[in-house]
Length: 389
Image (cartoon, rainbow, N blue to C red):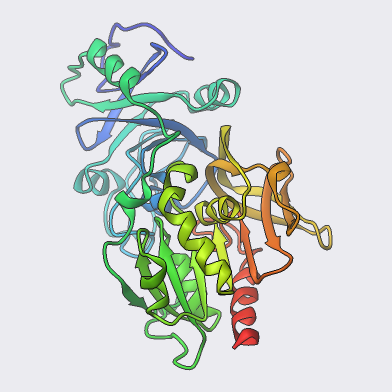
């Protein structure tokens, strides 16, 4: 896929070893050590802290196509989970000192504190092109300040890793107990709105397959009360919270694997007529629950500039995406219709049931990072709950 010279260049303190034998040298930063996973690319120019903490990136190493990553430092607000879930990142330019009034810590220090590995000095555009052509490879990212690496051992680890297909990661990133959420959206003047949930609003139970916090904030901003339950919550456990509607969250891994325990719950929720809204993995699980099929994509969609066309009116939304699996549009049953299509490759980006109150999108309407063209979907969901009440 890329460089195949195993000889370490002078000054190299980091390396990416791919399962095909490619060895890509660079300058390590962040934590020392190594990590194995799928190497994908991300095209966003901003929001690297949100991206690194997105649970959907569990099991993945991110190659950032934008060359200047880390330059605004890190803060306590721009996180989508308590800890980072991406295994590491690859960047073109060295991370400079922070240049932003909100910064409280250097990106390098943040990575060290969170045990995540960085690799700089890589031709990330060439790596991105290789992934586009050949697909997302398995690989090992490694950092050693002394430049000491056992390349054959790292290669063996990359080859031995089974890959994301067939892997259930939702259980690993999900919350382990239920909790209430009532914080709202962030503003420059006040930060995150706290205790802003409408006490009279409809009650949404969010099933956490690896959800991002900004999804919960948008549900609250749209007027809902929110309770979060673990990915493995049973139908009875969900219903014990007396939801007006149920949200199916984003998350990592193969939807078919997570669907082994998630799909039966979703099917029961459909039977009792609970309104459903799914995002990303939640979209894929809803698809499986109605009899559709999912598949592993060649390269996936990861970025904050993905155009999606609405089927109803032909309008185009610029969206944030992060997924390596998709629902096969051709496998949708007769009671499901296509609502959104990716203009990049024509893949299914949204569906809705015609006989029940249930819809989902493959992209991330909550953004963080990304555009806010699709925030209306949260209002649509909450309005459906109020109508059904």
